[in-house]
Length: 594
Ligand code: ADP
Ligand code: MG
Image (tube, rainbow, N blue to C red; front, side, top):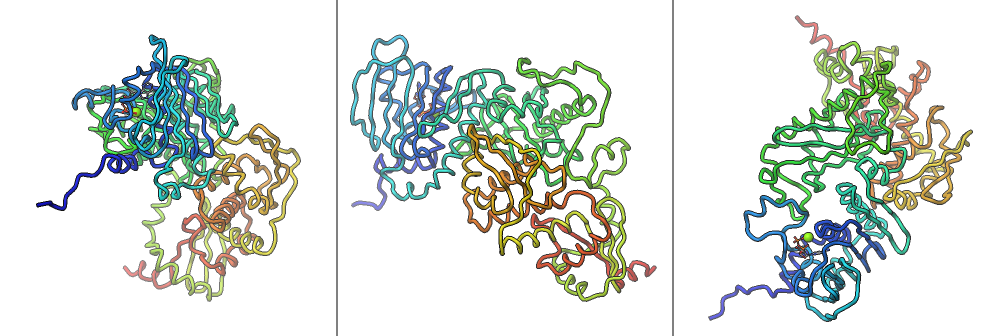
């Protein structure tokens, strides 16, 4: 009698397994690049066509394979990297499950051309739907070239699932950068449809970061280095003054592997406490090394998340390492870290120049160094003090009762301290965060204006040239017309460089195009492929934030309060931060009821 259980045919099983490993062209880029690194290559070239849909090709000058291995490597669980389960704990190489090539071969047409240095001829093998369709000896230089063609040609549903070229290419570039950032000694190149995107000669880590993110990154980096029995941390962090309002360059690597960890991110963010405002993100490139036996890297199919045996200690260590570097930077801001030929990790403090307070242009209402110098309560603490003094309202209640305030006659307006202003009404008192309130008001003004016509532009005295990162250029291009309609005037002048000649009118005087563009790019990165309306909202909210910076005068405040209270959502900024708190007469009476 037949049961109902059947074994899946191999090609189906392979396709299913492949779904885990190869989700999009970028996954193949990662796996093939990592294999090339494992093969000991000193030069790795990545060639992409149509954002990886039609071709992902990775060539290396590594150890190559003999004929048998060239066939074997496509078998599931075929790996030269482990022999038994215990090996998993010792493994230092990238892949170790012998799954990548089998997966790729299940969902694309694959060609491998390879030769070991010691062999006279090389081997070429073509595979389609996991079947070898062609094999022949070839004359090639030593090393290996894998070509993955027509990804998902046999699984239309998955092919349709791929995003736009700009998005897929962005993912590819991200994976490329992650591998390139862990192997600064290896020469890498990346091209797309014949255009060279990256050409990275081998060098040290600082040089690699600068190669990828541009020359101006050099001065932004501060080295980090700390070691304990458990973990060694090296790398660079970005100086607080260059923190961004969007998540920018945030990289953790563990044992030469890129990982994501919100837990460890928190450790770093915490180390920056009081150095950047809460809506800013620190940049970092942090490389951790731990005993592989104390690490489980295999918990996630994409191998992006890891589990440390002693996560808490790693957290503490990481935070301490970042704090230490920030400390060094604060006491000696004049240290010259710009020497391009510096050793890989430079932690030395060479100069004891005059100690200047680091220049930080962030939130003007927020001066961490002032707080630091006096060792007095930083702003965050002030906030909680305020919270304790009065039982400030829950948000939902606040929203409802705002309607009430709107009907009350206003009786006065006073500046308190920091960003706080007090507005009194007949029977209620309200404390406003002036900058946030202004941001909120400006957002609605801009929105209304843009609904009718383009936002006014103001020509700048000195045009600014801005070089954009590879990943950002296509994102910028795709929203260029929207950005122009918001008062930006710019033109592409080649070499990933845009010249900015006009900015939206109404920005604080010293606003530089670079800061704005950084904000916008950050916003665009976050919204990605989402609809136009959302992109516009996001960009407008960035603009409103920028325009809200700077001192606010009392008469201006009056207008802001009026506009705020008649706006659709007065209680929050577009970014979701609360704009005011308030206290009614009854509540006050209750407080004095003893
Ligand atoms: P894994 O990397 O986990 O071992 P893969 O499926 O990625 O599994 O690769 C299977 C095997 O093919 C590898 O273990 C290695 O022996 C061989 N291989 C893959 N890529 C290369 C390459 N570029 N050069 C030499 N050998 C390679
Ligand atoms: Mg591999």
